[in-house]
Image (cartoon, rainbow, N blue to C red; front, side, top):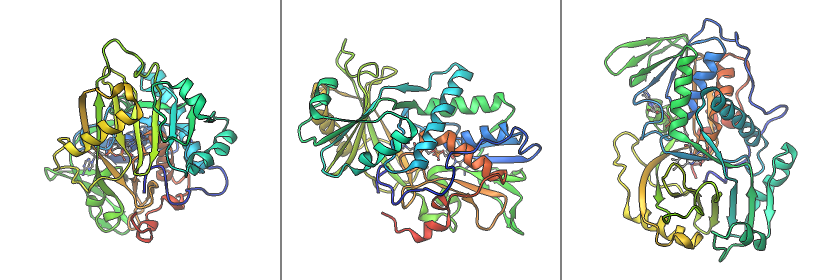
Amino acid sequence: MSAFEHAGVPEGSGDMRPPTLASDALRGARVTVVGAGAFGGWTALQLQRAGAQVTLVDAWGPGHARSSSGDETRVIRASYGPSVRYTQWTVQAYADWRALEALTGRALMTITGALWLYSVADDSYMRMALPVMAAEGIPLEELTLEDTALRFPQFALRGVRSAFFEPGAGFLRARLGCQVVASQFIREGGTLLQAEVKPGRIARDAMGSLITNDGGRIDADRFVFACGPWLGRLFPKVIGSGVLPTRQEVFYFGTPAGDARYESGSCPVWLHAGQDGVSFGIPGNDGRGMKVGDDVRGPKIDPTRASRAPSSRAMAWAKAELAERIPGLVAAPVSESRTCVYENSPDGHLILDRHPQAANVWIAGGGSGHGYKLGPAVGRHVSALVAGATASVEAFGIARLAAVTPA
Ligand SMILES: Cc1cc2nc3c(=O)[nH]c(=O)nc-3n(C[C@H](O)[C@H](O)[C@H](O)COP(=O)(O)OP(=O)(O)OC[C@H]3O[C@@H](n4cnc5c(N)ncnc54)[C@H](O)[C@@H]3O)c2cc1C
């Protein structure tokens, strides 16, 4: 299952926008959030804003290199196939990322537009997005190949059958985003701790405390575990293989000297759907060059212990894909690489739900290669779950994990 082909759509009836909590909805409640990636960081910030006394705990810190959120950049795009919910959550996320930029003075989001190129006949994911985007008032165009060639001369269109362009899409500075969210959380009164923790004992439908790696305890009234690829290990019975960590390699390619055609000022984010799945590129920014990766699930990885050194096979693939899509970069050298981790749910949808045996514990994860951008919306939804102000979305429930066959 790719991040672009979720099984079913996580819709429901009524308003699907993420909720906004009143500033006193959780006044006085002590909440501990474990995990300072995109999901945990935003959840902690939203809980703090709702009046809770929040402690955010992370084993290595916000946006560290082994976390799913820990690379330099992640794509933000509102086109989500037929899903109204994901599109509306992304609309809210855009507003929240922009508000955070305004509050902190840090540049986190760059709008470049996103160009989708289809070499396969089935472009239904983007075709189904057209009416959803139109209903939300967000521009998304189907381009002719002639128009595509004129507007984006950097790209080779050999084999391409259809093309779409979302002008409002772009990329977020991922690692930096986590760090800025955590700093803002501290500024608003939250506490950030570095510790590895284990879930505490559950008795009478509640967890009382967390156990730290040095044997200490962290007490709270309510707990949120937003532990990305580590969720299955922390909750072997409740999550287990419902979150599958996979190895995902990305490469940065140095662009020609004095040539801005492949930088974010002149080149869009791009996605290419081919026979082997979806590949993507993020144009040069912060002096890093063009980033190339793919959305095909790699082998299972241990997120703590696995070496993150690049493989020659993935590097050769990325070079070939770049040369095929952007011939002007055929000689571009690899300048950097990252080995990232997807935290796949079996159907590609998020996991945002209450622990089935503990009424004061919630789990947030399953970003599955598309979750980063949604961090602010996840934070809104999960803090409303913690406050008892919204119901769980069935498609994001824990119960479905057992029923869904892993793709
Ligand atoms: C290569 C790649 C490309 C991607 N592209 C995109 C994209 O273009 N757009 C997009 O929106 N998304 C994308 N994603 C997905 C997105 O990055 C993830 O869905 C998102 O970052 C998940 O965030 P998280 O907070 O759930 O997990 P993480 O960022 O992994 O955070 C979990 C945190 O929990 C902490 N933790 C775990 N266990 C413990 C413990 N026991 N005690 C204390 N702390 C603990 C970890 O240290 C970690 O910091 C991509 C992912 C990858 C790997």
